[in-house]
Image (tube, rainbow, N blue to C red; front, side, top):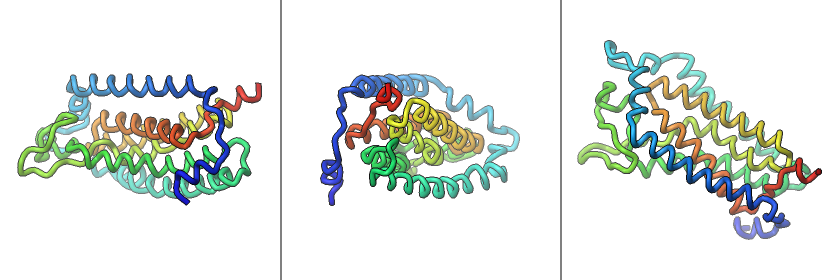
Length: 248
């Protein structure tokens, strides 16, 4: 069965009650994209923060080989994410079968696809940009120049694939649950959003401390996760009506 046939076979919730929320999300996505571009393309904030983490005398980022950050926050965190996503897929299956009142079938499908689509979209975006990691830049002991968002790599130099932040996406992927859990109520949706923000921010910060990413890389990953979640909700016609209001 194709995705189109899959979604059309499900009962379609009315979108009128959530239209205002969707319009607000669209406006916020546009505004935040402009703000991110204006702040980071119009200033040297990224490199200023990286310089604070770079040891000029040693010529490296001291925390790049830090055991805790590399073994726990980088490698182990990925493994934990795989396990948690697998466990979440069981809940999605239960919701898909109509066994969970707080997770309608379309929302279960939204969460399932979103947890895969967010990291995939991040990986795809890396192929469309040429930005290098901080530790690749010549001013931080590397070999490459700093590039603007739409700049291409110099001739003879392989394009960077460091933007946006892939590791942070394994934390921000949980943001899709903030959308999928709206029928469960405001508290559940906000808790999912908070957990997603914390997970993505912690993982993104860990990589920034190592010199693997700039702040803008992590924030753009957050924006991408948010945009993918909302776009999928529209495409799948998920139930976006807050459960708290439904009970009122």
